[in-house]
Every structure is written in C-alpha cells, then in structure tokens.
Length: 174
Ligand SMILES: CC(C)(COP(=O)(O)OP(=O)(O)OC[C@H]1O[C@@H](n2cnc3c(N)ncnc32)[C@H](O)[C@@H]1OP(=O)(O)O)[C@@H](O)C(=O)NCCC(=O)NCCS
Image 1 (cartoon, rainbow, N blue to C red):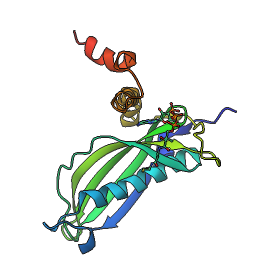
Image 2 (cartoon, protein in one colour):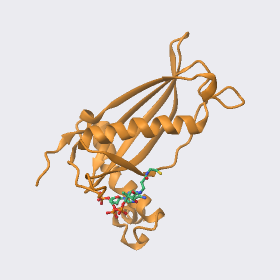
Image 3 (cartoon, rainbow, N blue to C red):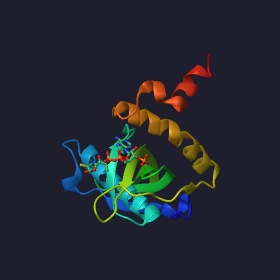
C-alpha cells in the first residue's frame, strides 16, 4: 500500500504551558526534565498527526538550554515533522519562553526527536513521506538524513563506515 505524502506544516503542533511553582528548580526556573516532558508530548502529537497512528519515542537528540524560563512565564513549543523514513519520523521543535507582563519572547532551545509508528500489534509500520515547502522546511528535510545516520551510529545501529551522508559532509571539505 502506498501512503499519500503529507506537507510538513500539516503536522504542526503549538503547545502553550504556564510555569507553576511545582515545575521549577531551587532557582525558581523551569526544570529541564519538565520541559523535556512537554517537548516529548508536543513532538509525539506532531508525529501522530503526520502518520495517523500511535507512536513511540525512539530517540532524543542533544538538547542545550540557552536561557532559563522563569516561574510565572509562559512556555511555547512548536513541533513539526521534518522528514519521514520508513517507519520513523524526525520531529523538529522550537521552544521559547515569554514574559506575559512584558509580552517579550526569548529563545529557550531547539531539538530533534525521532518517533516510530506502531500498528495495533505493537510492530513498527510505514509512515507517509513528508513534503517540505518553505526554505526552512527544505533545509531541515535535507539535513535529516545526516542527523538520522548520526543517531543510528551513536545508538550502535549503523557502522560508521556505512554512514555515507555523514562521511560526505567531512570528506567533501578536504
Ligand atoms: C524504537 C523501537 C520501536 C524500534 O524497534 P525495533 O524493533 O528496533 O525496530 P526497527 O529496527 O525495525 O526500527 C524501526 C525504526 O526505528 C528507527 N530507530 C530505532 N532506534 C532508533 C534510534 N535510536 N534513533 C533513531 N531511529 C531509531 C529505525 O531506524 C527504524 O526506522 P525506519 O523504519 O524509518 O528505517 C523499539 O526499540 C522500542 O519500542 N523502543 C522503546 C520505545 C519507548 O518505549 N519509548 C518511550 C521512552 S521509554
């Protein structure tokens, strides 16, 4: 069965949360773990929207927290599927904090997570391809193969010598 490709933007999820006392660390800032929990949910929703099936988180890429998000501030998460492979999808997220009184936004982080679609028996199942439209979506789509190879190498699922896209990145510079 051939699945109809879907636009990247059709998977867009926008999540908004308010940082309450129970979400903070001892410095009064949002805890990294709580933010990652929200990011996992937002990106899972984007993946499910794309493939219309239940999904599981297969991997989480490096996350660097650029700015702390303060108690009483708002968290905005945007998640979108950048590229689908066979049964897995890469989701890109952008995260901002917002001071609701000043109405100013500041960047918190960007991240990638990978999800696998499951059939009713819990086995991985094929997902529709992604159609990137904007310049940003096209760049993310293009880089997705390299990021996939990197995470498969790091998880021991691919031999470094087989990571052709990654190798090209380095050897083309020589
Ligand atoms: C992720 C999972 C479904 C992969 O199952 P599997 O039997 O190893 O399946 P496969 O080898 O057929 O891989 C399925 C897809 O997952 C991808 N995948 C597996 N591990 C991956 C990883 N660490 N990073 C990125 N992609 C990964 C494979 O590349 C493959 O993608 P493709 O079909 O698009 O090429 C399985 O390991 C699992 O259920 N893990 C636990 C998930 C979970 O519980 N998450 C919540 C956090 S605790």
